[in-house]
Length: 121
Image 1 (cartoon, rainbow, N blue to C red):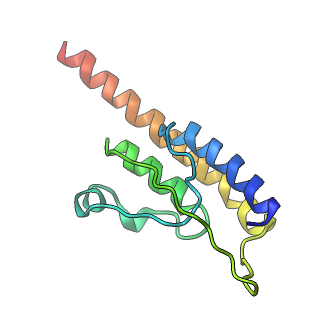
Image 2: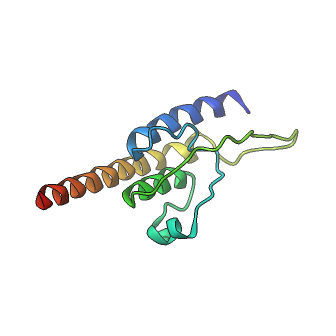
């Protein structure tokens, strides 16, 4: 994996851990996602951010639905002629907004849950 990709991945994964609420997910940017049918039915798939940044948005929506997420190790393999379409400009512009929305979704969900618990007591 190219060095710049590793650094970007580590930084973005750390930011995603903070904003999504899933502090145990190490590599949220690998691009491989598996989900149960129940999980997919619990979130609005049509509202997911459509480009680079969707893993961040997906995690916040899964957290809002109170679903369990596990981190599975995947070994990245880059062939000799592999070229990524992701660069600084394609990632930098949308990512802060996706992370901000992720954080807002988490805070709103946690606040609603606290209100419901307080009302039930």
